Image (tube, rainbow, N blue to C red; front, top):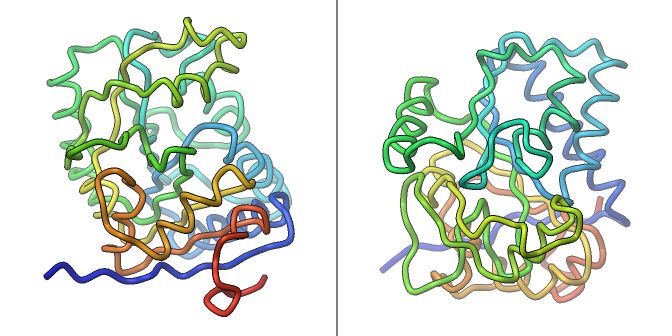
Length: 255
């Protein structure tokens, strides 16, 4: 019998407050461990988080020079400088504003041969000693990273065919043209994500509420990839009021 648990849940009044809290958690982890290995997401949800991290870096004098980062995913077929690439996204929102050393930034290469690139990435995570703190968002269909709902999930970094809903969610990176969004991507697998020592999932908005309810209350299913967070020993969901609207108020903490 598989042991599952309900993740810890903390609810804040709005997305901006939740972003400040997660940024403060990352800053605290960095100050406690200057050699932090940090897993990072992309998409709409973490933009506020990265803005707050840049602000905290300036106000607290945070030193990122020994930090190692691993991003969750990247589109297949895009060079790092492409306006729609996640590598470009991270440069714009975080990397160019902090003193993170380029050689400590780890990213999947969307132009590389997928199978060998996935192996290389897994080897790099292992060589870094594993991920200390993994920050996640969640898609409206329950994906984390680019692990899409389906009859099975890949355990390790792998090649993914993107759902139409996921491509629509990323159209803003491509001038609003969903047809320009690549159909495939590379992503950390579920086991890779779950091996992080600590996980924080941040979710905003009413569109995320149905998925959040299933992550908290189950069942554990490949049709809701984020539900596998129930298997992790140290995971917290940091939500705004809208994302938490389907949860039992007695089972959440208020920030």
